[in-house]
Amino acid sequence: MSARDRVSRWVSRKGAVELLPAMALTVGLLANVVFLASLARGLWFFGDDWDFLLRRGVVGEHERSIWLPHNEHWSTVPILVFRFLFGIFGIAHYLPYALMPIAAHAVTWGLVYLAVRRAGVMPWPACLAVLVGAFLSSGAGAENALWDFQIGFLGAAVFGVAAVVITQRDSRWMIPAAWVALVLSLMSAGVGLVFLGWTGLHVLLRRGLAMALAVASVPALTYAVWFALVGHQVGESIPKDVAQTPFRQVEGLVAVWSVALQMPGAGPVMMVVIAGVLLRRSLPAPAFALAASGAGAYLAAFLLFGYSRSGLGEGAGSASRYLYFGIVFTLPALAMAANLAAAHLRPRPFARPIAFLSVVVLLVPLGMAQADRYADRRRAITDPLAPTLAGAQWLVADGQRLLNEQPDPVYNPDITVKLLGEAGVADALRGYPSAPLRAAGRLQVLVGATRPDGLKAPSDVVWNGLQAMGPEANGCMTRHAPSASLSIDVPVPAEGTSFRLMMPRASDVQTMLVQGKRHSPPALWRASTSNVWVSSVAGGATLRVFLPEGDITVCAH
Image (cartoon, rainbow, N blue to C red; front, side):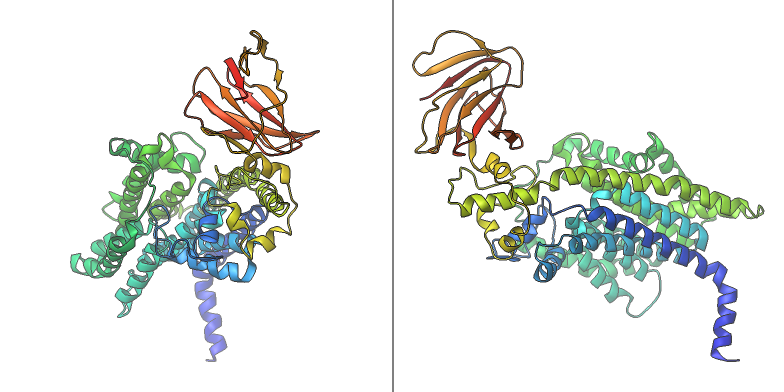
């Protein structure tokens, strides 16, 4: 028999059982990738991206090394990936960066499919569970799939799931291969610790304590050495409230499937389903080991997330980036539930395909809709950023005076005017439309406890809707604001202007620059006292200051 005949016989015998579900899953994951890439095309760099782009030696000097943690995370792998992409694309093109987490997302779910198949789940139930999990996780967990910075989290997922798959089969290379995968997972993000726990527990249930210790020892020791040398140098850390940790953990555990399915109460129901699967005595040992270790990782992950965000209040432990992992960790048990349901429907020839198509038609669009909404919210933040940064460069090139160094301190605090001048960044920004007025709203205005040097007192103050309370005295004018959000307008001369603003209580101050029919976005300034200096050097513009309710005093001295 020829080789061609043997292949034909194998395909005819195995095709419907093995190849068709794998092909269907491949097509589904590719569709997911194309959909996510179409959303990512409209996004841009954001937030933590700029730490990797501007402070880790990608441009300019090494302000921080590749070994220092980003917040609590060991991030050497994603920093190196950013360096590589910056060397090719700079920041002129965002899509190559955005494709990193999208590709990692697809690889993660391909590995999950391999894991559940090796654990004994039939091909079509495995295909269904993984396909739905991929779309739902890219919806409820869209922050991971649609933010290039999250290549750290999803890189940890790729290497972590790969370690689980490696330990499912006997091989003389199993232990060293698992070491490499787990160390790379740990070097990508803090969630790599959970994947280390998942792999260790899986090996413990399958192969015993000695083998589990052998697999986990080198990665755990590597992480401990890194933490002792540099990992403890977190800097300004997020506040912790240990007493709130259990509440944040339960909040996250329940939110995973409630958010993914957009059904309040779905979380506890899915947890009951998972428990039911694990309590079945007929569950084969490989299936039990994978599902139980995944459930253990699910509990451990949200304990870690809950603790790390315990000081941030309600909802902090159930952020989109964390929900993604809840779906990954619970998927093996749910795939086994799908396997049991498929076996129950076997006597009914049309029941299984109808059930398969119904689940896909109902749940895949649900994940797509959530991803689309996330992309819309992110675009609202990132669309103005490039013109703002280009505008900041224009202000510097024009020699205008600045009062601040950060064009966007709320969402992108790592960006400074100095770093925008670095080669590569400056050249790329010249290709974007410039919005100097938008940039000036942050860079040429200051609200604080001190008055910048060389600024004049205002020549005029226009009170918009405030009630007069008496004549000017000692250079001060007082008016009453009957409601919040009324404002004053102060013309800014070429030399700049500064005045003292006294409010009835400590209150954040919102400002805006106005030039004719154009204005900058409102800028919010944190004020810890009721008595602040408001200054601007945006000559030719009008400074508008929004006021709280109560008596307002403006003093020129």
